[in-house]
Image (cartoon, rainbow, N blue to C red; front, side):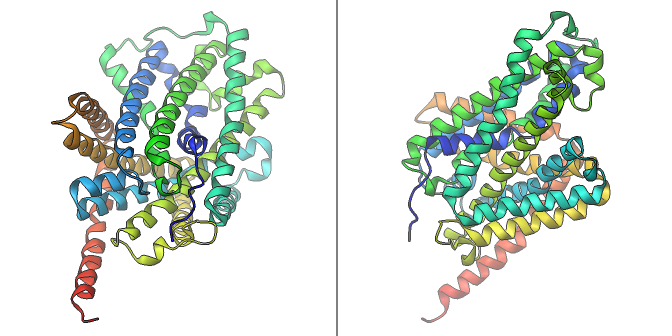
Length: 430
């Protein structure tokens, strides 16, 4: 039975914004400080590329009411095997992101309590957060959407406060040089664009629960584009405020740049920002878990994955898919904590990013194929979005690309095993 469509514009907007604004905005200003004012060029390139991707998936979303986002677009354009592999890799990007975001959350806890300084304490805190949010998601689609909207609004409060502080108390003399490295502008822009690209991961999340959205062909495109523009503006403004509030030399050495910037509020400023970081990462994780449950369900509805993955409970939640995704995320959490929290976060983040870019590249190809003859303008947007995805994939490095390919190829035996079972079932007498 088709569940009631309970999600509207703000639910989809908060899913898009909530997943994108996670830990990145709280750390990237320090990483980008050595590039000086050139770093704004990187933000603009990433923001423009992300808006192109948002426009592309918004165009694709207008043609379907099915849940699954990029999986549906790939399946409809290129068939079963392409759709399955895209869904396989895309789903992996989200259950891999579950421990990555949870680790980022746990990393901020020592600011509030020294009890969380040990790796095991952080791992247990991360695990507790994963399963608390999973249980909320299992209760129902509406409950998860309400939690996502609330956390998205709450995470924007400290960021907007910091932007206002930068406008009032910032000092122009704190700004770094235009190009302090002295390198050629083009390689510098490329480096900053690659650093900022991952901060936009998840922009397409608002497309995935189409089956639960009221008038999805209208609601989803508006929400995804509006969410991406919102995030682009926030990222640019937060980076500017931080550079105005913290001297360039100090910013380049900072491990908590927004907390340092918030010292202008007074003694309570760093704690306020740390609390905002916790809300931001928890909100991002809530959205990641929600999406991780939607993908297996969408594939199962097309009979390309085991049927139980499409099963919903009374609240409309695909509870088996949700539980499976969180179990895999929990296993990855402890498997990678042997690397140490920072190394684990870096590895999981790289793997999640590369497996999320491939579906967006295929989505751009699907729109290009559809619009090439009938709407050349949209075909051009899709082509530019695809080039941006390709640029980000290549910039991820050989090791990450190789692991991404291995992960995708690992899905082939599962696809063909399922295909053989479907053929046998079709041929058997009823």
